[in-house]
Image (tube, rainbow, N blue to C red; front, top):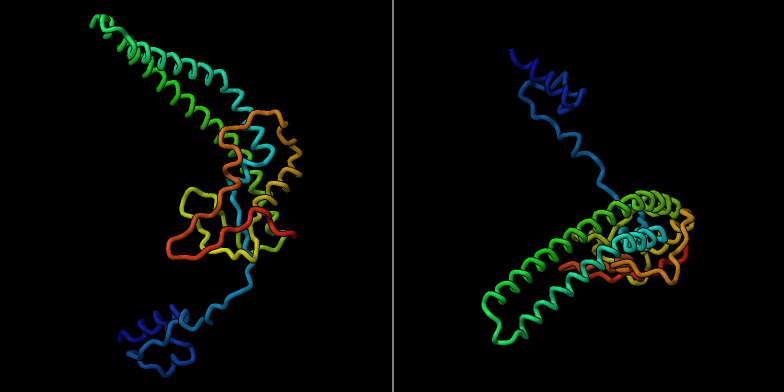
Length: 238
């Protein structure tokens, strides 16, 4: 009595071929699911590109100019912090070289003054560092969005099928790269973005931004148990 509903349910999920329904008994074993009949996956030709994305963003003319502008913005605050640091060091040296005749009251007063200024120095340094980093991140995020668009257009135009970022501080997705085939497009992305953005390069006499240049020259880190050759920094000629 319950065979017909069971048969209908089996047909609905494709477990029993339609041609077999007229002869199949209610207790018949379902056929192999359709998923198991799919053809085996096959490999396809791949053209892989490697990029240090954050390094490229930092090394664009726009990225370097942003860093230099922020350095100038925070220079007065840095000067105050440096002056306070020098004052703290001077007070510590004075206390160390104080004569033995210094009273306990005078020593305690000096210690309290040093402690107060030292704590202020730590607070000011931390506040300035956090503010500078926040401004830098905000500036780089705006540039990164534009560099990303240029990068995607670049890999599509040049026929790449896979793009891997080795510049992340997290575990690198790059496992291996042949030294005979240069796939690193970081410099090409920098040059392409600079050409499209129209932003001039920093002047030779401009002060170097903190950490500038460190990103784009970073190499892929080695992976445990895998062999990999570090890609060259100059992209192959297209």
